[in-house]
Length: 330
Image (cartoon, rainbow, N blue to C red):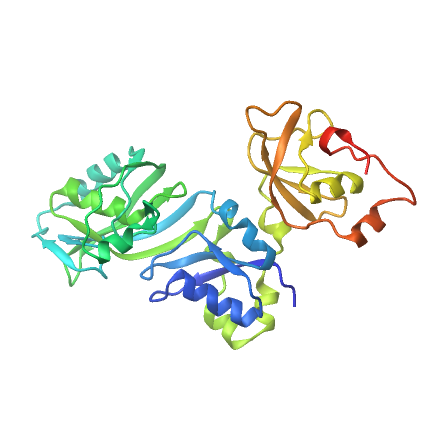
């Protein structure tokens, strides 16, 4: 079965993202696996699992917009900002109205900075915050830039544990929904925590694209291969440059793209480079400010140059590469 690809998993509640990745890797028979965009154990929904060489893409597949459905339990505040944590305060929220929640989420939608939850993987002095929290050590963290595109109230009511609000949230990468709900509780003056959380979209990947762990468990092991997306399809929304086979050789060596040698416009963002067959060779990004005569530098090489590639690309002789340091011959 293919060793490289991306599987969109509908993560179940109760498992860590790493546990899901380990299970998929075991079924797929691959030694390298990772994920893009961690989901808390409480959360369900879209988890992008990368297998084989696709692990080189994890950082870049997490750049896209995220969509969540979050249920906030009002009147309860916990140390983890979700229902799985220890309760640190409880208040009567019975007088909170739908209009109160609507006003508060309108304020949340204007946020452009956010402090990460104490129980998170954000690092402080080289250690994740959750390690400090578990040791009972308080750490003051700086607010980080975030993007909240929209928050909509889709349901408000009284549950067994107290009043609740269900929100549709669209935001940028790195935005913590737990912190948004924690801040909602402060704005309402009663406290709040996440009682349910489901990610319905991560970048181009939707919950409609996802498979459950039960699906891949039942049909093992071919179900992983059948459901996996190629690295080319997984990056299809990224800016793209196509090169000749001879240019592809230099790209596969990770050489910089010199100014003016590529017909297609070079994006200011990270972009992908495809060979004439449509295979993804590498990801490139903008040159450094002090680079002279260079348009872009390699950030990830997914298909390093092999001897058999050289035989396929050269027509019985030495061909000048258009993408090389100083346009050198090879």
